[in-house]
Length: 251
Image (cartoon, rainbow, N blue to C red; front, side, top):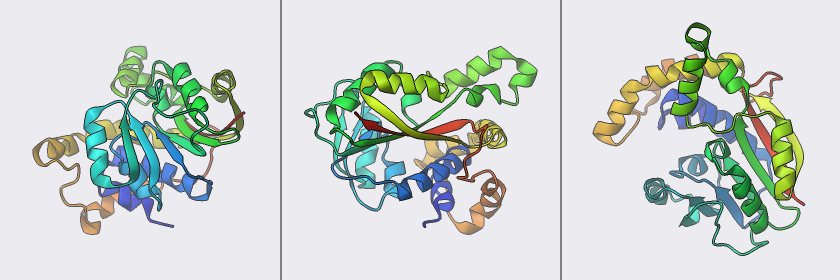
């Protein structure tokens, strides 16, 4: 298996990289029959590192990320559109996924229903999202209280941080069957991610000035960061994990 942790760290601030590295590992053993539909492909970075094959279609509503996704070459086709209004016909895709995207979408029910429409019957749909502990396990909230929790939710643009029973109801209403789920990313890992938003400010400056998050993406430059976050980047499911990975299929 690829060294997903280093591959992510060389391109992204560590607080995003070590979470994405965990998620990349999950897809290695999951079937993705073509054509494959990526709901919320963003800049295409995740797909370019995670999958050996090109994904058939990546869809995203934002022009900037779609343009950047073209440079990664991870998709056969890229579509700039709202996932609630997919331009594809019913029963078109044989599988789909949405990696850490659905939590950001206010009109989630419409997006799930439209995703079900364009998938074939029995097609798998994989996605991962934060759950309630994403907010309840924040370290600074213990000092600053609910105001900080709400502020963190807003800066991370999370509209939905829910438990599996909530997602199961949404999926059922949209035309999916929930097959399996597991929690991952421990509360300790979540707090490392939380503080990474602040320690990652130099990466933001680098991005503005150079167009790159990491100026020197080499082992020698990143070895200390990699050594620190590695123990928090375990893909092993944990009962009180702050994120949840879901496997569903279209009914």
